[in-house]
Image (tube, rainbow, N blue to C red):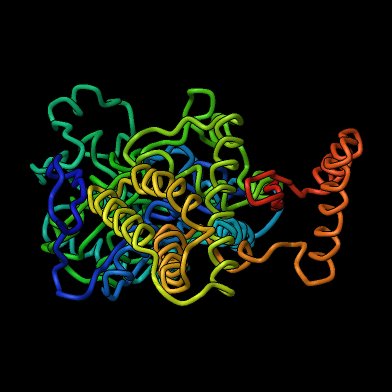
Length: 481
């Protein structure tokens, strides 16, 4: 069928075709680095990481650009207020760039723990001031912008298509605009391309209009065009960025005469107890706290259980359920790897057919607008068949099963980094000790000393070793934190 993605601009699913055969350019709006990331910041990186991994699997060369906003994002997400990083710098008594550096690495550490591939390029707004000034000058020369008292504003009325991404009409926006905002503006809807630095403002650069700093929206337009070129393939980000941020990006680029993104993707919010997770409200869970207390891959699994365009309501019960589901999937993969080592050569036709069905269902799900819930469901449809066939499975079929689980589970979904495939209690000595304890437990059970049998099982559980009784005898695995 090929990949079909929902395009926010066209408001429908459309076949994805890159502008240049064999190459894909993706731009994802990254974080404003003024505090530690919360759970909501994890969803976008995980979703677009799966998209990137799928495209790489299909043989594309992917340039994945995700920016770092380290200047210009004001506290009210508009043209008033205080720069978020400058405000934090005063609070922590640090230089603004110290704040940006500190929280940029906090963000990268968190998404690395979630097995998210590093961006091809992670440009910082503060490192691209010349490009933003150049774009602002171009808009001034074309009559789409004007300068007032050292600040430069985009003339929204001059761009009739403003609102085409979000579906908002200029007449409605003007009717609801606050007339009192920035008297120096020609129109309340106009937005800043460059801001005059007030006395005491720490982050400032020289420009043709005096010392100042770029507006929030101009950075992504300038950097995406610089690194991906005109008419690049995909621009992605959170649904809250659709308006005004992405709307302004389009206006700046197209008014300046550039072809901009060909396809727009937006992921929905992560909710906590039904409310949007946001730093401004304090309704959040810090990502580092979650990653320290719980297996990061179980959290990634949880994030992928909801379609990216739907809101995800985080609950602790949901996380525990995801941990159990991930443990089942991981244990199946480990067992396939273990059984393959001593299996006889040959194929098992029933297992081959089950693998064919898994592969077909998995790719059908992902190619239908990146439906990760359905892709995961394909695994859990496959698992009962796998468990039934494993005891008699032949080596060639087990080798294919291992390769397919790796390709789909790790290569595309990113759920099986090398560290989770090796038990923490690895090594012949420790494995032998656990086997010995299980033998003693079996002896107790045969002697009907169930108290002793249960005691051994409970002590192992306290140590994080889960014992499961099967038709083939007891099996053990590590409990996910």
